Image (cartoon, rainbow, N blue to C red; front, side, top):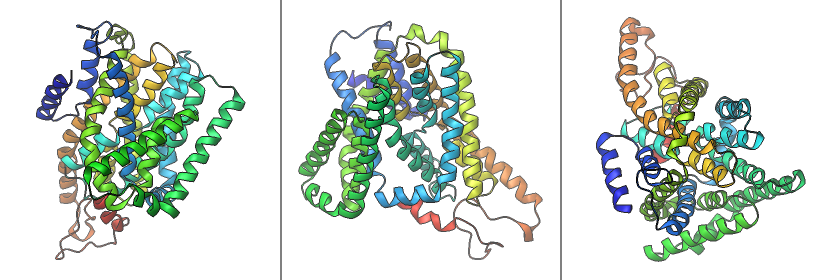
Length: 412
């Protein structure tokens, strides 16, 4: 199975797309109702999938520190709220219209809301958008989504567990208290955590960071808080050079078990259940593409980004991937609704594959449109470019708002 995943990953790299859709298809092919169902290794795949979720969220948390999270929350609150409303609503509305109930509606809201940080980061890197002025806006929206998930996942977990209103409120309160405590500890006492974890030996560092993430994730799960949130908070608590070293050590391990996780989700989905929801998944994907582009345009316009940069920001937010499957996996495991898994799998397949392709297609179109507009604008009124800094010989006529955010984008 793992050798097959390696072959699939190589094929995805050759085609120039994310391997996530191909991993899901492989899981569909070898799961219940597939071409050749796997009859062995079920326990390994199940445990490996859980580890995959923990590593995905741990490495995501290592991308940020507590200061960045707090700063991003303050400066991009309005754009983040627009993102939440526009992109969580389609999933929730469709689930309610289909009569799936409030629990499935909350789960589908998360499935349609969260952008894939991993795929988006790869798109920004592959297309050379890292130094563009709109990139800090995109990254700030991703940070806001991650913070929202830290609150959302405990709420969803409580609802899936069928807890009463009182017990659910207690669970959410514990989750919020945990998030608050971890952020305070990371801000005020992060150096002590880093001193405990730090080691000049890469083997010891790997074992300490991974072991701490497993421990905190397990404690979080015992407290009815998502294990994914616990791992994410451990990542946030580590910062600086230590986080960079830990991320480099954990990335191969994450890639291995994340691939197992995507296979596991595919194995849980019966391919025969996909055709009945395929049309709905396409409709939901189209709506989500429109709402994400609108989100990027709105947030980039508030930051003073010009037209082409706004479009690029919106397109970069389109891909869905790991977090969406994590949410759907929780709902499927709890038996939220039999059609939720196939719908989420098809939806993610479409956007995980189409998002990067759309970015590659839209880039030359945006450049052509910008060049045509620049030819039609008198030289004295020409607007500032969206990308890197202007040459010294041709300083911009106006100051460029949001310009100071570039160094942050590069460091991120």
